[in-house]
Amino acid sequence: MKLTDRFKSGLGAPICLTWELTYACNLACVHCLSSSGVRDPRELTTQEAMALIDEMAAMQIFYVNIGGGEPMIRSDFFDLVDHCVAKGVGVKFSTNGTRLTFEKAQRLAASPMVDVQISLDGADAATNDAVRGEGSYAASIAAMDNLMAAGFGEFKISVVMTRHNIPQIGELYALAQHYGAQLRLTRFRPSGRGADSWEALHPTQAQQRELYAWLLEHPMVLTGDSFFHLSALGNPLEGLNLCGAGRVVCLIDPIGDVYACPFVIHDDFLAGNVREEGGFGSIWRDSALFTELREPTSAGACASCGSYDACQGGCMAAKFFTGLPLDGPDPECVFGHGEAQLASQAVSIRPAARSDHSKRSPLTISS
Amino acid sequence: MRRLLNTAEVLTTFNPEQPWTLSSKVALRDESFGALAYHYGNRRLVFLKSRDLVDLVRDLEHHDKAADAIVATVGPERFDTYVRALDALVESEVICER
Image (cartoon, rainbow over all chains, first blue to last red; front, side, top):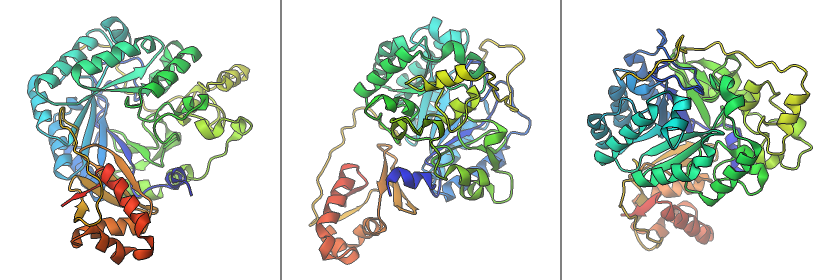
């Protein structure tokens, strides 16, 4: 049995567990995959969050990817991080940087089990702020300056690849080098508010080929294994090159709902809630949804394509939120099969998400 | 643990006549196929694809030299195979000299 087949049959615990601490956010990015903005009154209490960390430790989860919303908005943020570290659960957290003062950077630098990802979606303020809001570029840069000044070491700059920043890859790479940081490039997905901005922002086919070639030349650049649909172009990219939803990946949202992956916050991919009896562990091991996702998948409409083994039909979330069948091509299939199918469908029904925590009107940064 | 700047990793090669041990920076989690190892320093995830290899890695610290652990755990007939496997685990810093 190939190792990738082992993953399909499930692991004792996820390799890549994302935990979004809050839906509250002081930014209103147009592509926010969790449609964050305002706090949900049902969010896990400090005590519940601590108990969840205890369970992660008991499951021997190596590290947790903390996100949001903006996780640093939670007043117990550092208490939760400290508890993870005390329990031996490594922390990688994503932040927009607006709350990352020099003092907080020093506090983070003191803990070698904590890793930080600063979100930045353009190499200049105009490109970045068009997506993330006015002043957000300056805030990210200030946070990176603070991390460098505090001697944090190698943090990550996390960029969602769009039509407007793919031409800036070289500049983004240089920026990461300037900070001694690692560049992390991830795929833009039509999830959350990304569904509304997808048409305007997702890369063109020419840009996808450009990105693929660049990634092959820069294997040290991180991608979160998110561009495996590009592996159909030839040599596989670094990583597992498969959809890990429910197999190696899952999401715990701020109210404790467990989804198959961070990009499918929708009832169809909701496996349970950590507040239920049995907690997170039993959802991961035994939920009907995750059991189903670990079954071998059908190539469906992609069966006749010689590249299915390379791309595995692409990203489940990208298909779902553009109204494509899950056993069909990815909307960004490099051979254009997804675009053709979308064009041929007389009606494309995009699933509406129940969970939307967007603010009524976009706000500017206040921190 | 994140990688800090300017910390050159000193790589050694596996010598079965020396005492070895599972690195203190590595967490080992049993899985159906063997185990997953995660190194908190270099952040690498390593797959130990047999139960025998997992038992061997855990047993290393109980022997004065790794060769004894190999013979005791998997037997002399598969000695070379497991020397190669342990060599790969030295490279990924899952095991280290003690």
